[in-house]
Amino acid sequence: MLMLKGLLGVLSQLALLTALLLIPAGTWQWPRALQFLAGYGIVLLIATVLLAMFAPASLEARLELPAAKSQPVADRVVTALIVLMAFAWFVFIPIDVFYLQLLPVPEPFISGLGALIGLAGYGILILAIFQNEFAVPIVRDQSERGQVLIDTGLYGLIRHPFYLGFLLFFVGIGLWLESYASVLMLSILLVLLAARIFIEEKTLSKSLPGYADYVAKVKYRLLPFVW
Image (tube, rainbow, N blue to C red):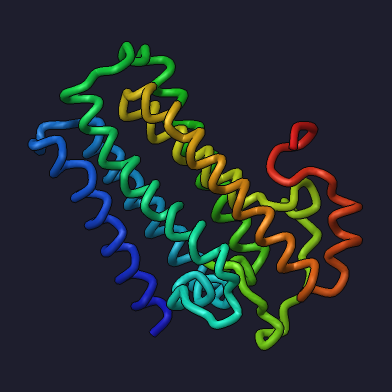
């Protein structure tokens, strides 16, 4: 059942991304987008199968409906803004590429580098989920699930590796799809993620034993030696 739910999630996500990119473009003749969708579909399918096989609790947590009474009101607002921003960002890319062309097209080397950055970001994102089954889509008290502090692996380096992978993944997509403007727009998403990090850390400091010591031990939230 979990594998089936995961595969349905893969198909739903691919269908959504296809609509967000190709409908505003007004054409299927966009090789970069088709290559991205095909490549991402393969990687997403592999990651979902591996999670179902080796980290089912992590996959189950990601697939659960994102609603809980313990979710702070501030996180409800910020999460909604992040989702809306992500949707708007994907829609903006084809509009910029086909109509606005606000900035020069990235050189092929830069665009190819973007593919590698995106792949690395997705790898970080998935590894963070593998290592932390409590990395759920919303901020909430997970005491009923027996939440424990995760301070090893990526979480021993930075406190929020999932968000780092998420940002790198988006940067890579923007470069691969040849839109510098979309990469600059991610500064808005970075601000929203920073707000969510503060909300999450405030919640965890109250509900998760040992989190204050963890914050003192792992000093950087998102990027080592920076923040």
